[in-house]
Length: 404
Image (cartoon, rainbow, N blue to C red):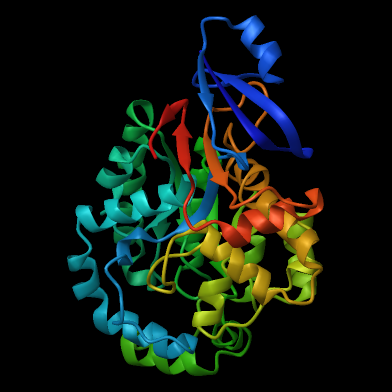
């Protein structure tokens, strides 16, 4: 048994002052330090620094580790030039992204307080790293392939990767999961089969959706920049699906839709009605010129996530939260800061179906400790100061064991 105390603890009800947490690998109780010491006299006491805030470990729901070697290879500013540069440099970047590179990024995420992340995996290359990192990993095996001629082969490869991640579940903190690349890149036949796999095994399910205006124009009209892309690389000028058909494929199973920047209000409301959530990646959307997701109009839960280094400059959750504060400039800043912290803790855990993300009895003992430069003068600004002042956390615990 251990007891950790802090000046403030972030709970589902907000920040509470001068409390402590008794824990093993799960949280046993939250109360004053004096009460917990009397109840657990043999517990080890962990005293945090002055002006410390104890958070549940942060959750990054959407990360691509496979392109972690990218620094200046890919072209930012607009979606289609970026996509062309991905095709041009993909083999070199994937080859350069060995286990050591990916593990460095896992460690960087831990330093920013991330105890859980959703790894979107196109090839399965990062499975070994995800087994070794102390973090919880929801391992999203991604399905991609729009050519019906190769559908069986692509689906077979996808299922092999799903089975490989399932075999890790008992011996690691990996949760196997399913991801659909996007409406324009997955044939409806294998899309439905993959959704059925998620339903059959109760696996988390994710899908990229309406990230760019080019995607919307292609799916609605079969025109635009993606038309030239598909003609050049895949010798086709006809989309395999449309927006409505793609959305309807997920009607019976809750899905975490990523980006949704170009979704209109009717589509966003439909996703909400069907119990789906959204992963919001503000820096990725800005760097690829996709626009701003109007989070103020969302009626469903959403998470804030970093995406991968193919469209970002770090996997730090605090860098992402600061970007969100700037991108959504119309929102009152303190209310937005509070909401954003909820999206990377309790909301993200609920979306992924994990027993973490909250400091309350029975939840996993995943903690991130933030130490402020000085005591906040106004309690209502605590969320904002934590986001603005934190580059790295002071300590990080996963299942009760310290890793930072």
